[in-house]
Length: 313
Image 1 (tube, rainbow, N blue to C red):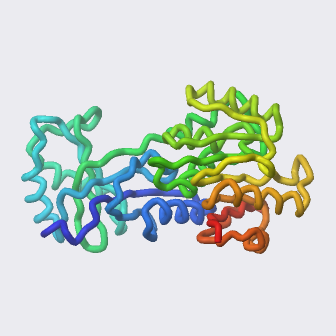
Image 2 (image 1 turned 90 degrees about the vertical axis):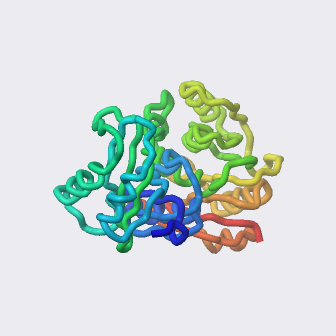
Image 3 (image 1 turned 90 degrees about the horizontal axis):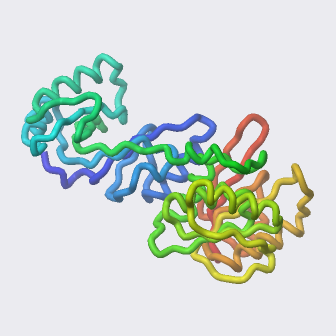
């Protein structure tokens, strides 16, 4: 069966139910298409470690409508004498543990090489998607963001590392040549995720102590960059993208007028902005001359975060 009918890559993913809206928003931004329940197919090649939800990337090398045809395709793969491991990727269908291992044995037996379950030189994946078997090299995601939970400086209302990584990806889906800014960076949670993905992002905060904490956290992870002390309402410059986690009214009072001034500052600094708020501010965003191109709400108990991807009108 020809491969021309199928996208070049399959990415499998998983998320908690309350994070599903954020996961779907991130994936459709990264791949410019809607994800299925457990996977998304695309011609875009992306490091699976970028997304906190993606488990891995299968590069499609064979597509067959039967296991027999896939076994024949597997026998034609060139391993150049290297060891391999074959993994069933639970993308579509309802195969249980026993069925998955059976498929791995059937297809794996036709590989021209020696299987190594512990330290294989090559990892392959096989997936069943909409009636078609897909086979190819599989690259696992490395949960880099997990290591960033252990920061020397912490702040109780800061975004979690998983959410921070996702919002950076939504703001900057294609980092090459892009400059970004977090003008209210706090202790640097967003900055850390951006810089760990090679995104050029500047950080600023009105609170000198927060800026010191952000610098310490960046240094702890060996990440480049400086953090300045500035009020985003008067900050100068122009960037391709901006991430703004609006201050909450938990520790300090932020008036409606002050918040609107911050939104105007964001529009001045960048034409593409990712705004995080604890209430629905779509009307204010429109009044600030933004167009809301995508949005979602992430709830945890009674607490909610409203996430808006906006562009200047």
